[in-house]
Length: 385
Image (cartoon, rainbow, N blue to C red; front, side, top):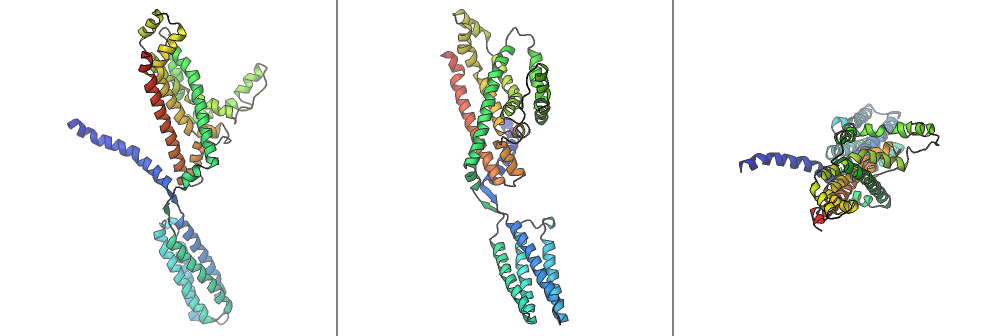
């Protein structure tokens, strides 16, 4: 019981560490920024400019009384103070904070209208009537403006043909990269797991070494290799072959993704293969099974947990990656990771970006459930069959 009480704070902290970012994503996916403060601020700045031109014309009227001039100047000073007080740097960042300034602006416009009617200039009275309509609209805008509102528009936009095509491309590229990693990585892991292979530790270190380098740097390093005058074409020219334009193509994206994620396939498969009891293989051979039958009936079923782990570790990050399509694909291959990145950092649309993130998370969750089912059906039970 004491150990449970000691572990409880740690478990709560870990739960909060995981849940809080998820809460932000869900909240952003279900709410939209209505830009109410921004719209009211723009209208107040526009009103300042309109009042300024009317006041300028009133000041130029011949025979203007000193008393009227003083009141007009005071109104202009007040309108200017409103403009200077609603900047974000002054802390006015919500509709609730900016709404009183809309009412104050309308009061100044009403006071200006009282003076202009007293002066009796028809042209200025016409301008005031126009100002009065705009001021009334400003107050109505401020009353109805909202910064945040419930919205599922992000999910609706996520299921439009354009977004679905991006999602399909992302899943297809990730699945193809995962398949290639499995085709290349499984034989390598099988060789490394062999009992008589003497360079096991050295090759494992070589496969793990690139993972110690920053992912971005590993990706950028392929640009001078694949470019038109790069290392690859220099080698092809040296052996008498024509150059190839591979950079900024679909082939280059797949190639670099396989390079980046191949160690994540090899290592878990190698771990599963290393744990196989060799006496099971010897028993199958003693019973007359050939090499292919031993692999199909013994080795592969027992390595399924490693294969499932490798597929999970490759497919999930490959689906969400955006560095490789951006740098190696030249931005021509727009994957869902690039779309999410763009919505948060460029388009200022976290509602859409978070909706895409949740859909991507759902796809990954379904993938994990499917792989878990395959693991259960083809693990130890497959050997008994």
